[in-house]
Structure formats: C-alpha cells, structure tokens
Length: 169
Ligand code: OFO
Image (cartoon, rainbow, N blue to C red; front, side):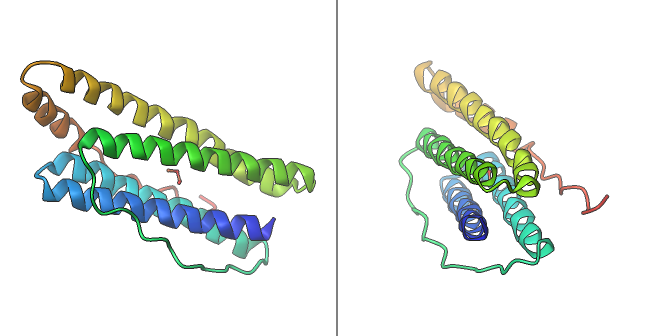
C-alpha cells in the first residue's frame, strides 16, 4: 500500500507540473484567464500531493520522492489543453480507484477512508473539464469564435485558489 501511495504522490506532483506547463503556454499565447485557471489547478494538485505526503508521514511510513516526468511544453489549442487535462484526470481517477481496490483487498480501512476524498474530488475535476470542453466546442463552432474565446478567458480569470482547511481543523 505504501509503495502505491508513494506512486500516487508522484502522479499528483506530475499533475501539478503538467498544469503549470499549460499555464505557461496560456500566458505565452495571450490567454491570461486560461493561465490563471491552470495556475489554480497547479496549486490544487500540490495540495493533493501534500495530503498524501502528510498521510504517509502520519502513518509512520517512508515518503519516497521519485523523479517527476517532464510535461509537454507545446499545445495546439486551448481545446487540446483541456482534452489532455480530461484525459489525464481520467487516468488519475483509474489510479485512485486501483488504490481503493488495494486498500480493500489489504483490509486497510484507514487508507480506504483517506482515499474517499480523492474519489469525490475526481468527480468534480472531470465535471469541470467536461464543462469547459463543451464551452470551447461551442466557441469554436460559432462565427466570431475569437470573441467567444476571449469571453471564456475572462470567465476562467475569475477562478480563485482556496487553500484547504488546516489539518485537524
Ligand atoms: Fe487533478 O486531481 Fe489530483 O491529480
């Protein structure tokens, strides 16, 4: 279980890295709202990683930090970024589900309960990505797609990072 949790910790750090790369790309192409959305996502992923880090420590396990894979640096379009995001989140969802399966198989009730937060979080993440992809498709199809994209950029600029409640609080 410990090995699988350390592997998930690495996946969460990669998620953060991937969204930071998308934020940088969005800034470069002039979409500040998209850049903000991905920067907030980067911050959220760091909190996911730290939740696992803290849990391993709390359980007296050994945190093992492995190399973080390099994320892509080029993306064809905003839609491609969100399609890649959804694809990645589906991969993370499968990974979390496998962790839950393992916790159940090992009768590790504490880890099973700990992982339920992630199960719920993945529903929200995939839902957000699907919603933005739908909007991007609408924008792409209509005339004056550029205007629609700028409106969506404005909407994504409003996303704010909310730090998780302090531990034990
Ligand atoms: Fe995107 O939820 Fe963590 O990885």
